[in-house]
Image (cartoon, rainbow, N blue to C red; front, top):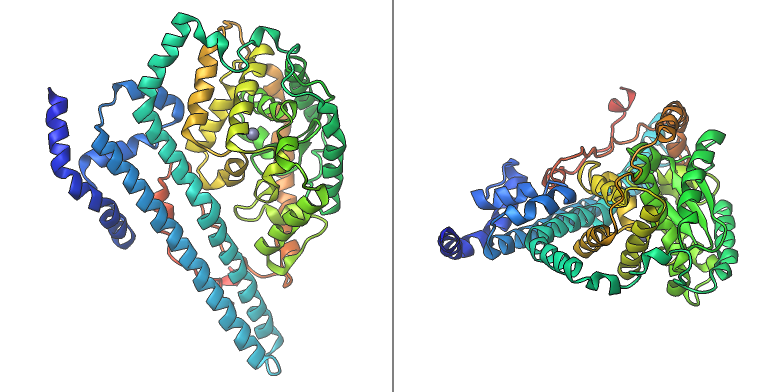
Length: 495
Ligand SMILES: [Zn+2]
């Protein structure tokens, strides 16, 4: 009974382990070498693995409840410390801004032009650092820890869940699950009166354009047509009963969103991040599902489009220096970790935990029914959670929040669908699209250099502070250890 032995050792270690997270993180900041027990370190390392790997591995792992609990506590205190750290950074930048403004006011009559420009740049850059710290504390870091907790849940709960799934399969009870009538897709009524959402959707598109929030379309007919063809294939095999309008946007952000009434937008960054057609189809199917089930309509109730975008413009203005809201705001939103996904109203997109679960389930069904490998969406999601670096995916994860139940429910649905041996994973058309996209993306990136700083800043030609780089597979703790940064000085700005 080696488990019993492990458990008794773990019980003795328990009070020590409970303290370790706090001590460990504290030491990590000071020396960048976290002190943890061997067991906790090993468990933490598993959390760097992908969800798909953990589904395979979970049954073989033997971590005790105590060890898992200790890790959970470590994650919680790690998150609190890390969020607190960047909140403190934000406050410190705030006081530096106040001090710089005071100095400027005091010296305004006597400053040389060069010194004045430098003072303006200084304030502007501190503003950028402050909003970056705010996004990290408010969005990116909590998301990173949410993903780690969800992975810990997989290790703890998936083996039992998997057994239940096998039982449901054997007994046939899986047929009675909600929306289990997958052979009738296209003839089911998920939600009546989908056509009532079309007006709201087109109003939202107009409003986004008016506020400068809507990135321009990718000017390449072949790419637009290709993505539309994937969308049409999925839509034809779904429960959507209204026309689908699908547009690829010229934006490096990795995201896709559905406005009500069949208006789907795929950002260029998502096409760059997708590795095969079933991933793209999976994302499109998920977004189609939100419109099919009219999630936005259910969440918005009395809210008006104008009110919702007024709010988006306010958020953007707070995030960005100068409070600029106008043509080309999408460029500004791409600076640092921002993105459309951070300012779009979640009710308008129909995002809530329950509706994400429903859109995941329906999306998997639609992709499957269209002949795609139904695991495309979850594979793409997993890649965002594992390889892309949590911070870079902050926009994606705001509109597609990570939690355990979501991963499990999707995996369960995939298991319940009849396997199709010839399901599409990759196509030559997808590979052709990627080839065409590469130079277009490179050109856009080149042209966009300078645009964000032009639009969000008032003083031109300032050397902006370096962005916090966050590499794929890097543990979040390393990002948490980033020290307070300084803005470029006059001499470093010339480099
Ligand atoms: Zn969604």
